[in-house]
Amino acid sequence: MAITQDLLARLTGVNRPKTISNALPGSDVQLLAALARKSGDNGAPSLLHVALDDTRMLQMRDQFSFFAPDVEVITLPAWDCLPYDRVSPNADICAARIRALASLQTQAQGPRIVLTTLNAASQRVVPRDWLTSASLTLQRGDALSMEELTDFLTQRGYIRATTVNEPGDFAIRGGLADFWPSGSAEPVRIDFFGDEIDSLRAFDPISQRTTHSLDVLQIVPAGELDFSPEAIRRFRKRYVELFGTVMDDDPIYAAASEGRRAPGIDHWMPLFFSSLETVFDLLYEEATVTLDAAIDGAAGERFKAIQDYYETRKEALNHEGSLSAPYKPLPPEQLYVGETEWGQLLTDLQAVTLSPFELAGPTNLSLGAKAGRNFAPERKEGGNIYDAVAKHCTSVRKRGLKPVIVAYSTGAAERLATVLADHGIDQMELVEKGQAAKGVADTAVALAVLPLESGFEFDGLAWLTEQDVLGDRLIRKARKTKKAENFLTEVTQLSPGDHVVHVDHGIGRF
Image (cartoon, rainbow, N blue to C red; front, side):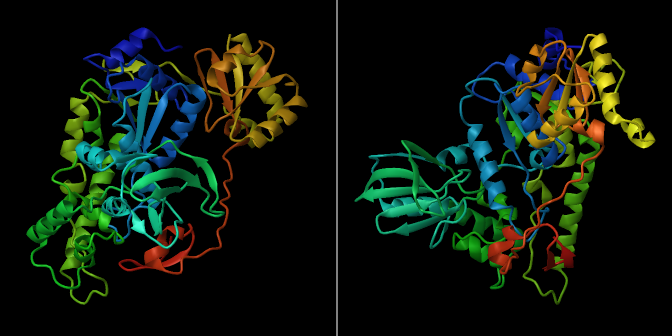
């Protein structure tokens, strides 16, 4: 089955279906791409999809690159720390979030979709007006003093350092200002001639050599915190209103008062702003919102976990003899969307759930994708899997479909092609985009590199994945030997598997 104009019209109409069934991974991305192309461009994103988690979101992003390279994809990840944690989200996560939010302020040049996750969508974001006022665009010849630049970077969460090593750092040396813009792949060097910008250059942080010159540079905040004098006064006032008189042993209050980013201070983000928004506020009124099938159940667990973390922090605050600094938690509704509000938002937006399963009922429409062939029986019985793959390709051709074999990497694709050539599939054509698979010769098999776990049949193509053929992949993560020596300054260098001592939970594995 293919995506019809009637289906798209119903999904963007007033009375939308509650579910789209038979929307298997891969076919769902093609549906969302068609929706993005259909939606009008009025300056606001017209389509948002809430994925279950970051892994699913990034898989969908890569699938969009293959199936719909013409669609602009903005990914908004969630913080990579627990609610009410003592550590802040990773600097790269902060940069990705602020860049995504800044991108949503710009005019779309074509079809656009926002990909986010349940955790990200259920957390409030900085207000749009602040993000606009907190950004700065520079170009050669602009009048700007070093002091003005320093004040701007400090108030936007950038950290002054001796040398620039990671996003969010800045360093001043004479008439040169080095800083690593949030979300940028490289740091930037600004050369001043008096109070005038003489040049803007990107440079390699290792060799310190210029890689290229810049005509224009947009600086966005390093994270979702505002350290302007007004925001600091607002924080201090509201902190005291919530928690009473502040004693000397409160590192969060002290850091905020000094305009300094302390570990974990992000969890008090709401106190820096008059109000926060949700990601749904960034959409225009007739926007289409779609959800992964497992969102309903996961949302309930998410809201329960947030409440549990909050209650634990409240209880610990009253516990005498704690070895750690007091943690004064904000009420959950200040930083997170509550369960009732979440349900109301999805109802108001007529959110549509994309389900891979066969469903019935008047509020359901079927996308028509069918599950592909899995060779688990052949693997279990010890038969020749590759002969079975060759027969399967012949079978789908007889049904009017073109077979496409998918691998996770170029090396895996080459290995599959070599093995299958010995089993009768000697004509394979590598395709780099989804639509190119339809142009493969009728006697050939298309070969693609794509992060797709399970195959499916849809729109004239039968997708067969490496995992369908060989079974679940064995993923071996590269071991990192560098350990964090200083918890406060190098927490982001911890590697999965490192042993740590947590101030609240004791000995564990990161």
